[in-house]
Length: 164
Ligand code: COA
Image 1 (cartoon, rainbow, N blue to C red):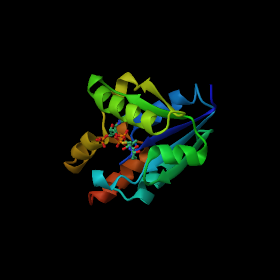
Image 2 (cartoon, protein in one colour):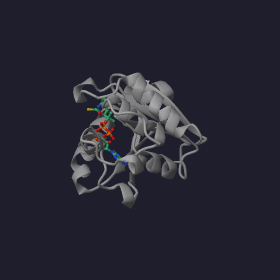
Image 3 (cartoon, rainbow, N blue to C red):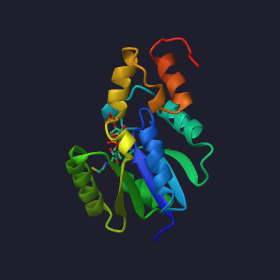
Image 4 (tube, rainbow, N blue to C red):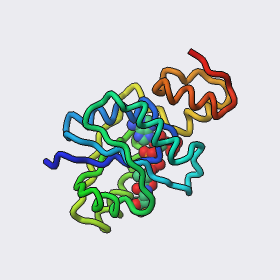
């Protein structure tokens, strides 16, 4: 088993669901590069640098994790960092078709790289970054769902005062 995996995503922003998946991934891989995709097509709320900074803050105490950013094809990025595994999370059946298509396309592009799926923690199966932002913008209590730094960043982005 290779010791390195790349965990790619938009992370707009990182949630506790992502953190949980990274922690579980570290039981299999010694090192995980969390690779933030620029992904302008998704019109992210946070800039690439803000998303990377939130990841750095959220994951700073977890050994074996590196944060990086990339633009362009994920398979090109994997070649660049010499990774042969991509780690992805599955939350529900609805994720499957999209993930399946993406894994197949990536395999076509680079047969040497395998995609490994882990099931998202049960507590977070309902969570997505979009649904989180939707709740946050209307003042919903999302504090339990994101790392503390991300919570403050979301409040700032939506023009709300900092809160303990
Ligand atoms: N807990 C909570 N939420 C989770 C989660 C977990 N464990 N796993 C995924 N999600 C959520 C994300 O927050 C995100 O929510 P959103 O859609 O509301 O923003 C959603 O599930 C899926 O997003 P994410 O995991 O961030 O991936 P993505 O689909 O935005 O990004 C890339 C996919 C970046 C990996 C993909 O677009 C990519 O590789 N792009 C580069 C170009 C390329 O090579 N494409 C592939 C070949 S065609």
